[in-house]
Length: 350
Ligand SMILES: [Zn+2]
Image (cartoon, rainbow, N blue to C red):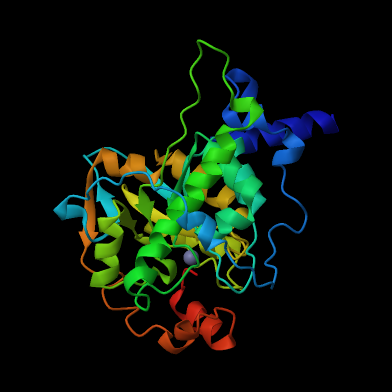
């Protein structure tokens, strides 16, 4: 009797949510399932935590690589993309998760987020610092390999792009591209991906085509540098505010649910600094799905409509980050109390 009650309550809840776990046995194994066992995919207990350890990226090895040729970005897209205007009736939304990593620490990997997205086959985009890709080799390959995920460039070492110039600016973008391509190369060399003769090698994008400015800051030179390297600069129109420590899953969910509209781009974090993001996803995704929304990658969203392009970078309104803790960012030390105060105040994404 008790058991029947539990079963019916559970079934009822799932019905209300309109949202069930996808049965992986119903479709062919993805590259991720072919290459890693469930244990290897499962997150470690402390893997979401940031390690305060300074690690140098091997820039020499990245510089030595020949970059993939970049396609020119058309004039109308050489700004920062906020959202996408969609044809009437189309309800698409792009969830994005930043994997920020500075020179001062090794950021985490929030497996709770990744696992939830995988379980429910939710498509999403991750913007990774090149350094994050380098320090999380296996995880980076798992994300690059996942057909439901898209990986974009988040700078090499998460610099404030208003403060890097010349070769430094070019390399912040180019060496992150090289880090992705190196990770992809290692992935494609896995025995699990070597296809038998006569069968197709799985399609994994050769290079990243999207870029997200660290701290959400840019200027004209930075926008030009990104576009010159063939990348589209992607911002957002919905800020979860998830790097704010006290921000609950319920508060994150309330913000997202009240602000999302068709064509929205939502910013969150999967480097362990989105404190309650993993707990917020089950509160957000079933409701959006029940409202008829479909989750797509940013690349798919862009292809489905007309991108809304701004001439500058900002949080929610033009100019709202112009003076954003520039003194703190100048030192490139994102852990000071002044910095976190500012983040809390402005729901600062990093
Ligand atoms: Zn970031």
